[in-house]
Image (cartoon, rainbow, N blue to C red):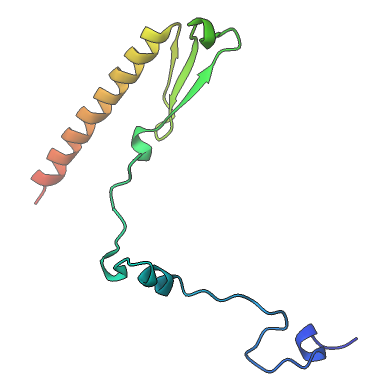
Length: 115
């Protein structure tokens, strides 16, 4: 059999051999009462990757009994911190977040002072 499915079915040029649904998303929003001209994406993400961590619980951890033990890893830098209890987890998180904030403040100052 030679030719494409569309050629065999004698489908006019510009049409699909299989009917497809075409939706006009913007028109649907307008009908729903949204002002599509005013819609913009927020450039500041709600959960920035610079503030994202992975929590890995140790195989012996029993969170249901209040026994937390594991490792906290910062996604952007790859730095990891071991902890033996909930207080250690919170202390590691607070320490690292404060260091990141201080580093970004210093970086912003350096960038602003450059001619």
